[in-house]
Image (cartoon, rainbow, N blue to C red; front, side):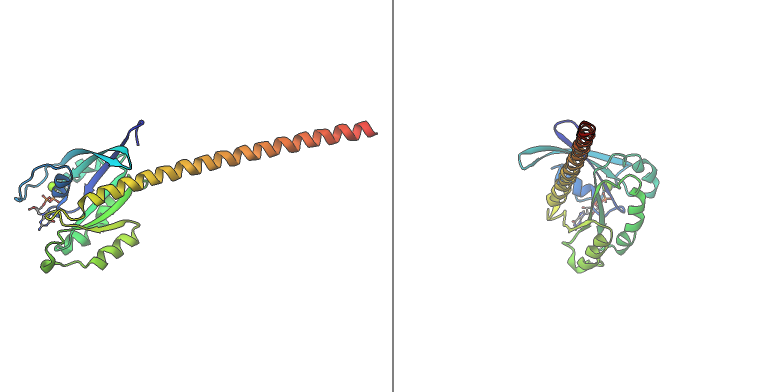
Length: 210
Ligand SMILES: Nc1nc2c(ncn2[C@@H]2O[C@H](COP(=O)(O)OP(=O)(O)O)[C@@H](O)[C@H]2O)c(=O)[nH]1
Ligand SMILES: [Mg+2]
């Protein structure tokens, strides 16, 4: 979060050709052809979201997924609040590589909201990873899970909204906890002072009655 208006940084990671750039394009209304155009290094888009009347700017970094660009991509993980990890439900290897992606981001994402996305679920007949397998992996790693079809624009906006809501919720909880702790500290100080005053009064009364 930054300033009065909110600005959230997201990154999209995962193997090549799972649909990361397509996901970003459809969400940000960028025209993109069906032809596969590999991302060189990293790409960036932003979009304004309205969340319960609150305007939120989402800055999204789309990474290549190619091992050659991993070093470059890693420098964009700093300060990330939302991580979208994508695999292709018709490509088992992209699912098996999820642990290495989690590992890749682990140093920068301890406070980030992570979402697992199984993309291309319009290709049901070619499916190699079941919905349950995706869900189980997400549960084991404390992530929310969505299956999407970027091609059919199914569940795309929900991913970005879910993360934004979770970031806001997390921030609200942190603020509430900080307020609670501050109140508790104040209570201890007040009780301490009352005890001290009572002790002083007792000593004065004791000396007076002697
Ligand atoms: N059938 C289908 N194809 C998709 C879907 N999403 C992306 N693609 C195609 O998969 C290929 C790779 O997509 P791209 O977004 O470039 O993958 P990236 O390398 O992860 O960024 C492209 O040809 C896309 O048109 C989807 O949901 N369904
Ligand atoms: Mg790409």
